[in-house]
Length: 196
Ligand SMILES: [Zn+2]
Image (cartoon, rainbow, N blue to C red):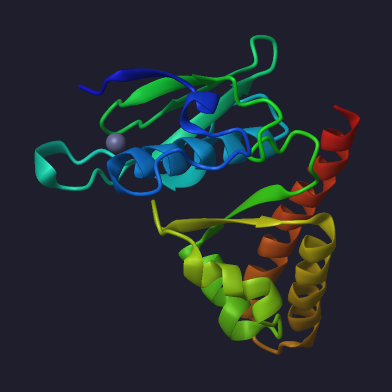
């Protein structure tokens, strides 16, 4: 069974939004909470969603393989998070207007399966400005999560469309089309966010 953690993000930060604890487990916990805040506040739909963040628990000293789900409750300004595997979970408050508060930023969290990220890296002409973030992203549930601005996501869509139109490989074309359609829907949700 997991624990329930009630945390206030500013307890972990100094006046300039830097981490109080510059190393060790306390810093790891701070980074973990900040990454959850960033993910939760960049999502537009008010639903619990997979963040691409790997659970930090190590039951019996083995890393939990679960992926953290998060949800921003806009009415209470509380971020709820949980690991579906080990049931570790918590509530984060006092995160508003820290530098991990993405409510008013236009970046969007893009979750790609390892298959999709390999497709982009190996089959399209998208350069390291768009794919460099793949290497730094943690793999969890056979996926990675990266952040893009609308301009970057649009550029990426352009590379995917170009290759889909260009290839004579029918399967590859279909795979690229599917990916294109999914990412295009994500791009549309950014507009929702600016209306929020
Ligand atoms: Zn877990």
